[in-house]
Image 1: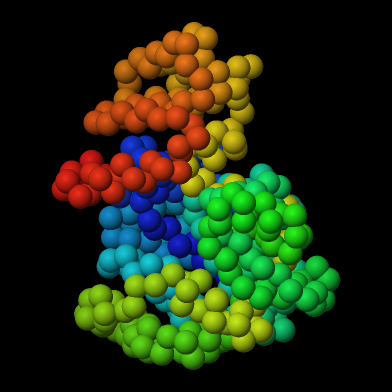
Image 2: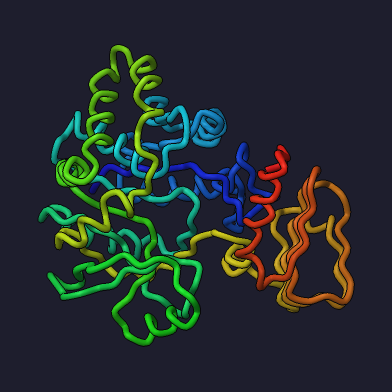
Length: 359
């Protein structure tokens, strides 16, 4: 159906200390199975396209781990970026590489750190998105909201096009609870899943219109891909604008009437914090979630609604507490209330300010 691109970057600061800059969340098994998030992403994308048409864009620090986790993925399909330049450069590079082979190819971009429970339903949604992309629209996959979530961005939908495709009028930042409640009640908003489907020529034309220097830099890199890639990449990549795909292209394209969405309901979770991890995994009779295969390292008594992540080999014991998160790793322990899961990133910011390497 399409070429699939997986941007695999970031450090997952809300999942610290499990997720670190050198060992980010997509490399961890948080799916309830032995598969890592990245492996699970590739597995479901194989229902859409052959492995030869799946590309992973990742950083130098993670390339070896990605190759180990995906031994059947062709080596050429692991594209290594020398330094983080945010999602637009990564996705734009992938689009330009695909366009070399087929200028009108349909490309999908799918984060490597999300969970999807209903793959067959995802495939149906992507077929609808690909049909919109063939008509020249930059397509997104929107998730039908089930509650007023403050941790996600939103898509404000406008007129209906070919059912079930709807125009996207605006991209909205993460809202307050009151605003998220208004979004939910209006019926005009979907969660922004960060999944995109488009014809590569249409996307690259928009990238050139809105971010000409970024577009031109990527074109120069791709022109040297088979000859002097390392030299040209080393020269140009650090100069590329560091900007997300939403800010760089999608918001401006929506204002120009070029963006549409397909509502999806396929058991999607953005594994953004420990609360989200727990929501995606089975709980015991007391509402506690133990993340990992070895439950023998945990002893709980009179504990409810809590999340325990034993990763150090030490025994983790808890007594008479509720709604807390405990993450035990060899060099750091996190304890916080479950309703503060989104705020874990503040601890990472503080450690960075101190110059602490344990991030």
